[in-house]
Image (cartoon, rainbow, N blue to C red; front, side, top):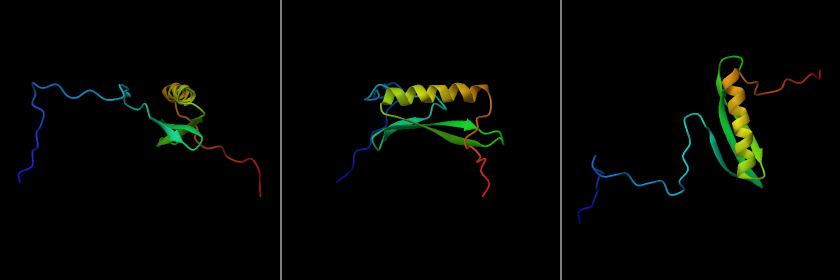
Length: 89
């Protein structure tokens, strides 16, 4: 029994996304996590490495707002991702 595989031709429009939301490049990701939502944004550290900076919130909107603030910080320059402890042990 032959299988049907059809590829969209250039004339045919692609199927629209079901949820209607799209993200721009480097916008990060937001998803349900434990008792709320989590998201991350790719930022550059002072050492020049690219890494994820995490944001958490009770609602998706709250997490999205925190992510937007992180984006703004990342656009202005390197972002510190870990705090060094001032304690000596």
